[in-house]
Image (cartoon, rainbow, N blue to C red):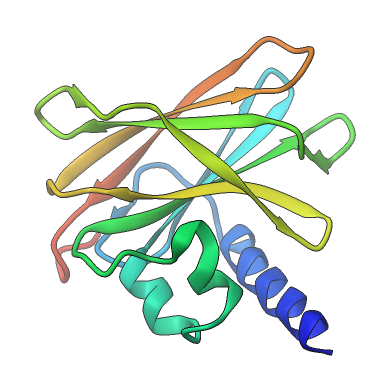
Length: 168
């Protein structure tokens, strides 16, 4: 019974992230951000949620609070998530190796490439990790998706990390 509730809660959280409108760069001080791009027949969905938001909205011992070792309790840390969907079959890609590299605003400094861990919720797979965004401004997040037997996919997303109360 607890497993069913856990799967339902995780599925509801994931659906909430994926069901909202998708757009371009968005402001974020803790609010969720989502975007989607199509590359070589694959839809790449990207979302950002503050670690603070995850700590506030999910029980301490919930699966969401345990993912990737749990949300760090430090300022300006966010959870990034990527979901890859094959447009020809409308199925999620579950066997990809996904990485992200953040480009720091106005400094053209790049973080190291960070692997995004697979997150399986029922039969649905997405990829995610916590990342530090210690500088306010627009981050470029370069995403690489490697699917066995296919050329690597590359795309990038913009995310505006702004102080609380300064969102668009």
